[in-house]
Length: 335
Image 1: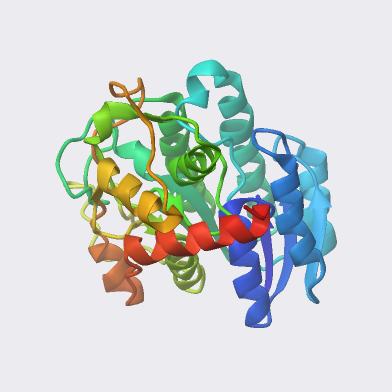
Image 2: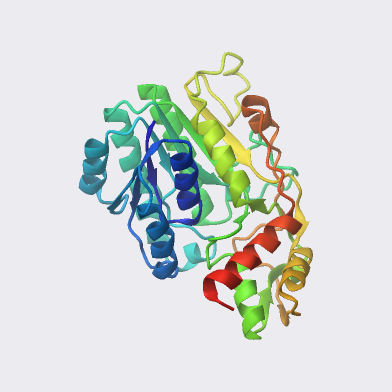
């Protein structure tokens, strides 16, 4: 297939592109290479992709409607995976307008480009953060997501609502994927695993929020990518079992689905830090702090819907994934 990936220089996007190229798909990567985190890491990911046959790249932002539509027209994709977004819960407190620009205006541009070119299937990144103040665990796609705790989460729920509208009005098949704390080699420097590893090796203290007591459903990058591919290959149709008198956020009479992709094995942050220490052979100096505004105490994914529809559920133990990341980090940064 011909597949366009937005955010292709990102953590998930670059990993997905490699997997699609491995199986023989043609891939167009679209990314603005912004400086939210170290551009050199994004460029290194991109350089690996540019060396591969079947990969093309266009530099541009989702907000740049003309550039995005030109990329669609030149490449003529059959399917689209939208992974470009302004990420991060904490940064949304500092720079909220970046989330409206990229995640709302940008996503509208993606929807419009897909609609007018009759794209077979749009898969897009949502987030576990949409569950917000919901304290029922594990989080299921049938649960309410009406109480976001950050603008980032609100923008991701907005994406799901916007996608449903286009699925309903224009019969554009869309699938939203709620990722749960993705980690692994080539990961994002603003995420805990990367930050902790860098600081522990440098002998610097690490900030441990909620005193290390909150839990996260840490999900290894290979499991995330496999989930994306499984759903990309399964074009949704209207759900014949959907009951308008008892609606669920997970499906619709329109060609629309939402899935969780999580490890289904929550780990306490303090345990996660222990695994990093073991892999590094170093002990962390810890600044124990209260929970940050916008963060939720716990996340846990119910992946039964993903398993039911695709036959897949993530399975990489965190003990394995952390070790692989630390090995990559030491090799990449020569430390």
